Image (cartoon, helix red, strand yellow):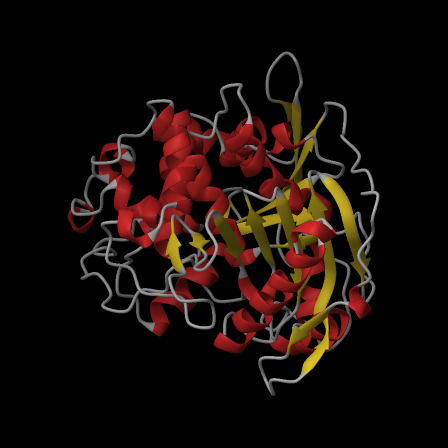
Length: 420
């Protein structure tokens, strides 16, 4: 099975239809050699001071796969009542002052775009700092939620068995005895990870091509180095984030479907969104998709949240299994896993399958990506709030608290006046 994956990775650059109906077209895009200038290079393009440029200029630093769904795009329509961000008030978590939501987005969260969908219609859409509606933003850690979503679909389709070892699905890793204790369930839930040193993480990034480190052979060669997985699980895992373990999930999905990840994503998720713009998935030098590599436009990012709402409320059978959505939304009392709460959010908030189950009101979940890039989903109110931001750290309690205040203010403002 591993031989056909190697052949697919080598067959670039070209474009191919996924099947006869040509529902998706995927094209290999080499790294753009055009220089951004003397101050941004392969080793600092994701530094805090360069995030706004780096997250939108990913093609200058890494190769990718361009994913286009050829079906008819569904253009988002405006809601009858538009929100005025400057008239909505929220508590500033940094000094407890009451300020308008527009201020918090722009100055506290470093937001570049916000989109609010109520019943699938646009109640607010705004862009700052040069971002436009058609621009794709690299999601980085936000990709982890998408991987778990695809993994849940694979389980529902019988392609993955939760209790089997990851080695069962990746024959090329048979020699990695340290992986025998890693089940598909544990990998999908993302509530534990192996204990990696800072040097391990630096080498992993270099293997993927994120920086200029001297690691050759691509991400899967690095994952299969002798003794790579002879280590214990971490006592303090970074839940909801990508890491070497996440690239194992990418590999297992590709093997179980016998398709490249970009094609799986397009067939199982992206094509169902009826997207307005192309997506990109960053790859290593061998053409293998990376676990932190998905890039979407803000409108198509928001559609991921709408997809979950529609799957829960539709009478028609969805590819997203009911058990997955119920697990994300279930109260803590129905959960058996011993997960820690997410500092900065309401009590009861915890990571589940790369998403965040939000404490407080029922049936609210979120995708918390790096740097404030996020989606808030209230399944009862059919509300989605998608944000692209460039907060100068991956995650902090203050960033999460700011998001919580913005979510609550926007959620309250979208409700009919009689229900507030």
